[in-house]
Length: 380
Ligand SMILES: Cc1ncc(COP(=O)(O)O)c(C=O)c1O
Image (cartoon, rainbow, N blue to C red; front, side, top):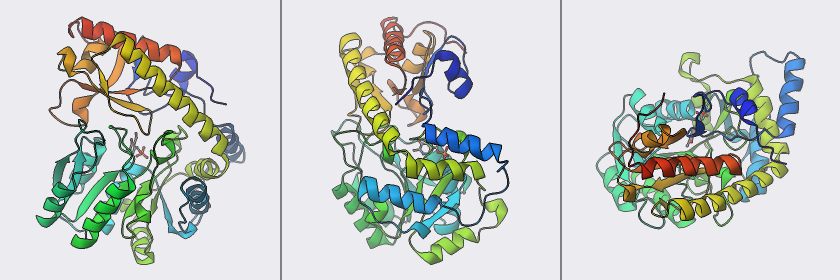
């Protein structure tokens, strides 16, 4: 059911990921797999019907998401709680501007870089707190969160599951955060775009099921590999909060795409079989990566990958400060660790959502680069 794209197909389908010639890409979070057939059919049908007008007020996205949440997580979320928006990152900005008080925002580090940018463009200060990838659970440091709230922060950006660490926070960890949010009357914005990609062995907990003042921002675009459809959702339980989001003037909103609503509705509603096959495939890729690393890069340390297809590798034992730059010089593009935590050396994020053969080429390219001690002029 999961069809690998050939190199030519991948270059056409994922032009950003594959933008450099003669390079195997394992950086940006897109998968080298064809979309689920029901999504393709629904989009083709919509385009053939000429359904390219503005999206309507009131659509099926919220109901489709509720069904997905009930089936996958046993979570009952009202269909009317969703507010459509253009993207998760711009949805975070909207939530900050419309629903959160001005003032510092706690951001656990390392983080997906646009978290920092979203806080900065709203004129707020980032309060970084460290997640510890060395610890087995890389969980939230609740004492640090408490100190940040006590010092005046009233907002926290959560990534559940976490990109780039691949961590799925436990229910207990999230309940601890929810208790602090209640104590300090703080608002948690939780980005759960990776939740459908929770892998066997881990259990995802929707944060909003523990803290009804939180703002959930999500989209099927990551799990179903379709960022071009430009569709996401804010999910808020308080009708007054929802009214504030809906009343935001057009230039303050992000708008969204009719095609995003079409694709998103079908993804949440009709693609469970495809998603199950995908998760199985990603679990196989995870096992293959572990084998390849043990064989070719035995000093690499991979964080337990509990969700997503983005593996976080600690390569400091090889003594190369910027392994991503070194790998690029050997035809492999990885995401540099320092993009997720400024100043962090010796780490990369590796996207394993590709064919087995390409994954082997990626690890082999990295091995050659590190064996070289990182010398060689980076390409492109
Ligand atoms: C945690 C996280 N949030 C958001 C996004 C992007 O979402 P969008 O394209 O809807 O802004 C990504 C993309 O990889 C991501 O990893």
